[in-house]
Length: 159
Picture 1 (cartoon, rainbow, N blue to C red):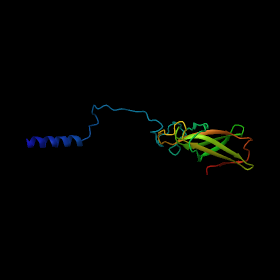
Picture 2: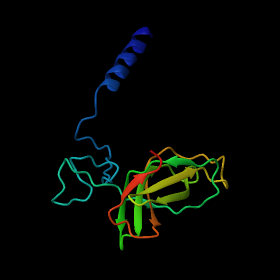
Picture 3: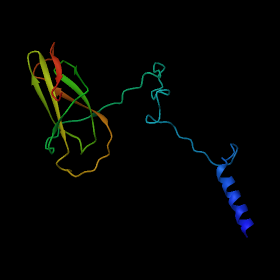
Picture 4: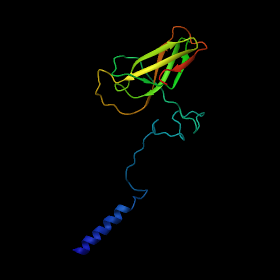
């Protein structure tokens, strides 16, 4: 009995340690790579101008101020640029998902030499106890100026 048990144990260990042969009939699943699985060596756009050193910038999700958030805080933005007639500024920042990171308001202070743009975010008052995934997403909003930007510089009010 002891010999049978020992032989079975040896066969079991030997079977577990050997990989299946390549010509095995085991089914394989193929999956098209998506933007999340493509690395710099395989650009998502497939453009001949993309190189391993250039990874396309993810698009930003539009956000509009909703107001009424709980304890809104200043949020730094990553870029701001004039669009159209120069009286509109497109502001981009990195944030979390709603309702945990909701754009409360945008304050604009127009001076003679600069325009200060300050973003405020907080959790939505409608869902103060919501549980959200922790993922960074780019958001974008547009603010309208009283007069064209001209030569004035754009300053982040959260910094």
